[in-house]
Length: 209
Image (tube, rainbow, N blue to C red):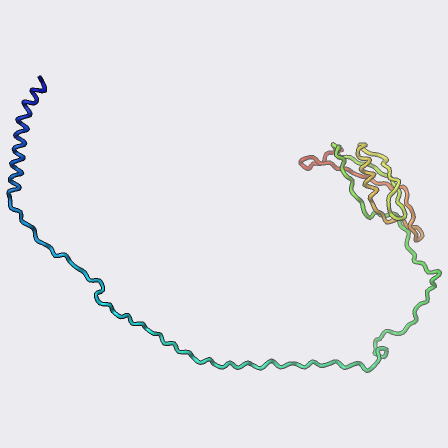
C-alpha cells in the first residue's frame, strides 16, 4: 500500500521535470550558431638560407734557429812528474842506522809465562727442572784439566735434590783457562762454585727458596 502511494505522488512530479528539460533543450537548439574568428596558423622557417662559414687561417712564421757556438774545453793543467832520487836511501839524513841483530841461543831460549790459577771462560746456565715449585741452589765441587775442561763434578749441597742433576750437567759444559805453573798448564783440583735456580710466578715475582 505504501509503495503504491509513493508512486502516485512522484510520477506526476517526474513528468513535470521531464517536460521542462525537453522545452529548455529545444530552445537552445533552435538558436542560430555563429562561428568565432579564425586565427591564422603561424609558420616558421629554420635556416632558410645556408651561410658559408669562413675558416680563419692562422699564419705561423718559423723563426730561424740561431747558431749555437760550443765553448772551448777548459784548459788542462799539466801535472809535474816527481824526479827520481839520485842519492841512496842510506845517505839521506834521518835514515835508520845500521845495527847488528842480537844473537839468540835457540837451545836455551824459553818464553816465560807467569803462573796463574784456573780462570773461567764460558759458563753455561743450568736448566730449571720442570718439577721445581720454588727457587733453590746447589754447591758444586770439581777439578779442571790442563785443557780447561771440568771433571769429577759433584754436588756437595742442594736445597732440593731435583737441582743436583741440572747443576752437574751445567758445570760439565763450562770452559776454563787452565792453571799455569812454571810456564806449563796443569790440573786444578778443588774448584768450588754455587749454582742458583730462580723460579718466578706468573706476575714475574721470584718465588723464594
